[in-house]
Length: 152
Image (cartoon, rainbow, N blue to C red; front, side):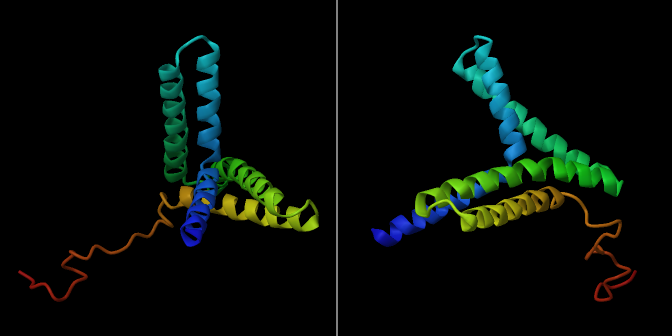
């Protein structure tokens, strides 16, 4: 039971930081859901508005990052996703460390590095959808590059 509890705790911590990489879509989804709820709509409308808003923000961010060729604009879009993720990672680590050790310089240092790692993960997940450069990998089915296929 102890081993299974440890695995479950590590999985929940991994899930917490994975969710922190999607901080901007999650923040916008929660904000939209709360706005719809404050307008007097029900729970189903609140959930639908939140889910739709979060999905639109995430997919729009990826589409803009992939389609824009200017390095400055790509940097700004990635920064727009990485800064909230870094803040969420910092806060998550501060909360976890607050359960284990007392506040101090080590808590702030570890939380800072967790924030950097979370921001880096958000940046990589956004950049993973984009091509690395203008060069593309050769097509393995191409007859020009694959000498083993018979030429007609």
